[in-house]
Image (cartoon, rainbow, N blue to C red; front, side, top):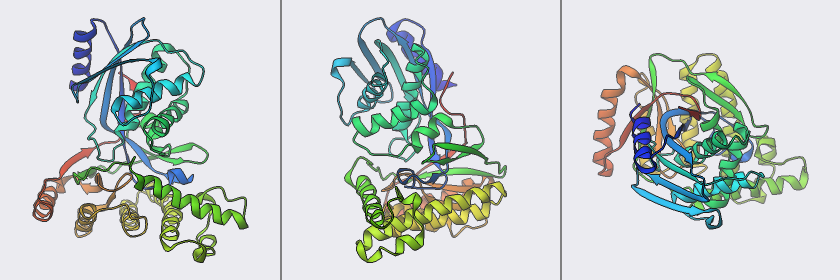
Length: 383
């Protein structure tokens, strides 16, 4: 594996010792968007786009990092930990999260790099946090569970990057399984594995090249809209703790008490939780076409109700719907405002379809999309 060899080689040349190596995958989400922070259901999977870490203790109080994708080096001590917007602030957050669980961390040397496209909605930040946390846990034998590490990764995003994300991304990176999707209950934090075995099909991600910044106010505004709906529902039913507890009928009872925008966003989430439940049944029945129809529904809900799409994503999904024999389903993936669309496509149609998409996309938006064919893979592990 070239990425593993490159990482190890750079580490040895910089630090002249042998590292522990950890592979941390990015993730896709097949269906169940913006439901995780509403205690709903999601269907993510780890994919074969990943970060590789080479790490070793250095018997000092210094943390030395080299990110070879950025050709960027950073060194700091425990007294330097602080929030910010750079890649190393995520790693600071992981260190702080582990410390807050009562563990002492000595200094480490670390080299990492990978092939997860930045800003494409594959959760490079979750892979970064989970891979580094997993490496520290292995190296210092902290006995932290995978769920502990997912929560520490989420803590780092919340407190060091300012993004109030749900736990899906971290969970998927850590709990992924080859050729399986996860049906994750974000309330109970329990999951089941769903076989994703369609030999004639593959998952094609099409990168709009619109770079989203989830830490922007738009993401947190959507979360606030959901919380507003819940706070009003709680006045008549204190048992409601999140939109997971709400039926469409209950939601409609408060339609006149909230703005149209808040109502539409809450309605999308309530419907999306039910859609994800139905999508799991479709996978169990091996019904890829039925599953794909639900993906299209999700996309237009994200676009028209939750308002997190963009013209580029809408065009790509609209185009996919015109090729029902080749593309079973498509939708915008991730938090929104750009990134990738996810497409379930026949393997023998990829080349021709990609050319058609490229031609139309370049003519419309004057920029080239990128295409990534991905497979479902194992979660974070030692190489």
